[in-house]
Figure 1 (tube, helix red, strand yellow):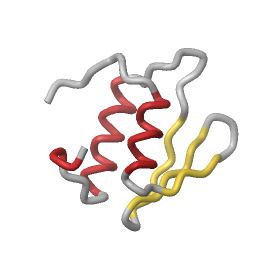
Figure 2 (spheres, helix red, strand yellow):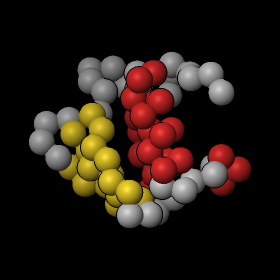
Figure 3 (cartoon, helix red, strand yellow):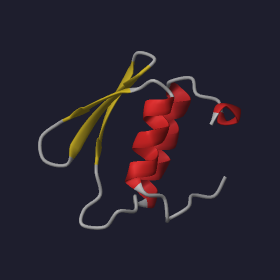
Length: 73
């Protein structure tokens, strides 16, 4: 699946919350995420609102490792 370049970080956080993820603030722009016993740290994009392709690829891997199926989202 091609990686989009126009996904807002706020939409990702909404998706994570809907999936039941625990989201907590880290230092600076860091965000700690835990979902189904899988943990990761991501950086909120700034000053732009859109998430870079590399972070989207990492988020996709995180969700896969946490057992999220694409038909669930």
